[in-house]
Length: 134
Image (cartoon, rainbow, N blue to C red; front, side, top):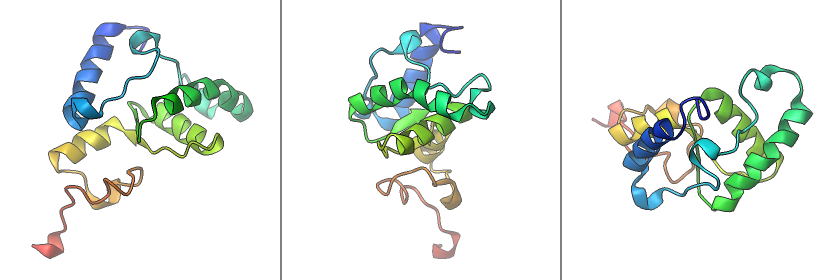
């Protein structure tokens, strides 16, 4: 999608992310939008069996993410999430990778207690509804 639809789609996604996390918390990657680097997990590569090659290719993305200094990396799709999460562990970044839908649900107060696996300690208890506490 990044290359197919270009910057207009990137701008729409940036609007959503900034709305959810607050513009002051948005840290851009360089390069960005339709020129952003691929994580290396899409197009079936995540399941291809070429793990060493996939991780080597993904080093560029890992370096790009680390250069932002951001506390989180937001991934828009499952393949990106799985690849970037693995890159974070493999290359020692240990930055949390969170699905965009997780942050949308968190901001709406509808993220369940068992849907918080990829959130850092700073967000694990935000907007948690505990029925037993009612």
